[in-house]
Structure formats: C-alpha cells, structure tokens
Image 1: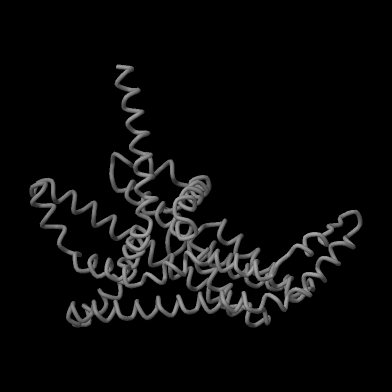
Image 2: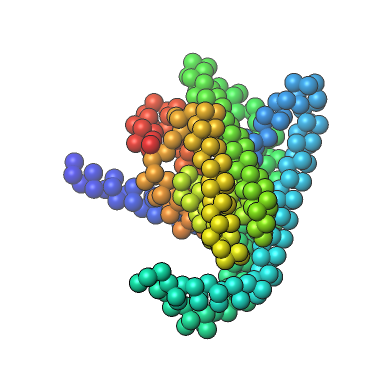
Length: 337
C-alpha cells in the first residue's frame, strides 16, 4: 500500500514537471490562445446585443471581431508610442537626478543617502534600453494579433457546438448535468472578465485624466500601466501607485504635486476597488492574498510579464471551475479570501 502511495506521489511530481515544461516550451502559442479565450468572453455581450437587434450572426461576429482588432491595434500603438516617448525624453531628466541626489545627500537629520557613485555609473541610454526591454514582451504579444485573431475566430466559430458532442459522449441522462455545469462556468467567467476589464479600463482612464490635469509627463503611459496592473489585486495597484507618484516627484522635485497625485488618484482608485467593484462583482470571487502572490510568482517565472498580467485572471478561472464541480469545491474554498 505504501509502495503504491509513493509511486502515485512520484507520478504526480513527474506529471507536474512535464506540464511545466510543456507550458514553458509552448509559451509562444499558449499566451495568444489564452488571450483569445479571454477576448471571446469579452465579445459575447456585444454579440448577444447585436443578435437580439436582429443582426445576422455572421455579420455580428465579423463586426465585433473587426472592432476588437481595431481596439487592440490602437492599444498596441499607444503602448509602443508611450514607451518610445518615455525613453526618448529620459536624457532631459538627468539634471533632475543630480538635484534629487543632492537633496538625499543633505538628508533629513541623520537620514542621508549618497548617490554620487551611482550617478557616475548611470547610463541613461542603457536605462532606456532596459525600459524598452521590460515592455518588450507585452509589445511582442500585441504584435501577434494575427495569431490571436485566428484563435479567436476558431473559438467563436466553435461556440454552441459543444452541447451535441456532450450528449453523444455522455448520453442524454448525464449530459443535462454536464451542460448545466458548463453553462454556469461560462456565465461566471464571462461576468468576471467583462466586469474586471471594465473596472480596469475605468481605472486606467481615471489615472490618465488625473495625471494630465496635474501636468505629469507620459500620463497615457501610466494610465496604461494602471489598466494592466489593476488585474492584479492589491499588488498591482501598489506598483502602479509607486510608479506614478515616484515619477511625479522625479519630474517636479517638490512635495505637493506628487502628494495631490497620490491623494486624488488613489482616492478614486479606492472608491473603484473597494466600493464599485465589490458591488458589481460580488465577493464570491475573492482570492486569498497568498494564492495571488504565488500565482503571480509562478506565472511570472513561467511566461514573464504577460504571465504576470494573466496570472490572477487564470487563477480566478480555476476557482470558478472548482466552485462548479462538486469534487473540487474544497479547493475553491481554500483559494478564497
């Protein structure tokens, strides 16, 4: 009995290792596929609205796909142009670095930081290359729009054909229960992705407007970062806050502008995250902070920056599936906040 248990544990470890290898090797195909799956859920409400307005399904599908392609293309252009503008303007901030180093060198009482050696070794061009390298994987993903849309067309075309296959595979007696579970998973996943994307988009636009009103450079870039990082609860918002407030201090060199950026942007962010989002999404999809952290680390190690952005939505989808499969409900409870 013990031998069987040890053999099963060893087999599970080998299976996990092989799964990780497949996910790592198949990254160029799997990331566009997962993005296409997410997009298929996002366009479902628009497709439903058009079909209810008596628009033929093929025409509605073509129209929604075309609009989604245009939106993602503009999104990619915004990300790339903002990143290039940031890198191009970095040299003019070299003087600001010297001012901040002098301020930190004087310090406040016993708290002093000497950055003179670091500034002597700082290469602005190299820093710009590092920034472009950091956003490069995401821009590369946007550059694979054709592959994403091939997957998306295949997924949308295959919608509605699963029911007969389930009936043929399981028989009518068991097919009803399976269809009910799949319909529940489909509805919950669609609700989560649509509402989370809407809240993230509102957060990004809000940050863009606030930073533009205060005259912060590259407001569009930080709005884009806020939109993407909002998919990561707590950790993402903290990173976005540090980026925009730190840059505001870096740009202006004073206390009050970064302070008001922090107060206004984070005040609106708190309203969105703690009042609006729980009301429209409910609390049933809350994830444990420990699960969020390990998911972020695992998918970031596996797929880099795109994996970090997709990590929490993927974990939320796993929890939704576990909630709807009776045998897996204990796992869903353990994943909850």
